[in-house]
Length: 113
Image 1 (cartoon, rainbow, N blue to C red):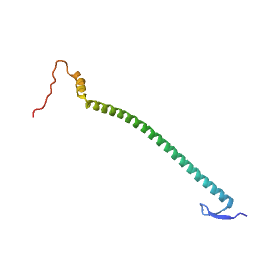
Image 2 (cartoon, rainbow, N blue to C red):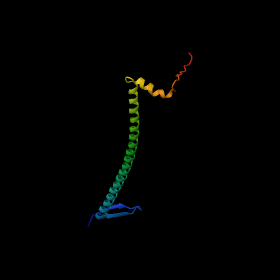
Image 3 (cartoon, rainbow, N blue to C red):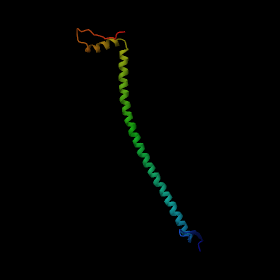
């Protein structure tokens, strides 16, 4: 005869479980615990995947802005280098001639001191 273990029920009565039913209860509890861990792990992995995707999209946006600003910086640096190279002053004057009509003098207003 299999050994019996004493267990108290919710109403206070003494219940007895056989060894086989005790193993069954432990197996069900173990299975439930393992399934719970699998579900928690799955949900965590899904959340990590969503966060990773959002970060990758944001990184793409930032890279596009960085590339645009790097292009602007390169263009401004080249322009600066041209202005301070030999003959750069003459190039600047030639560029600015379009603002002065022919046969006109440039007037520069200065505040009185």
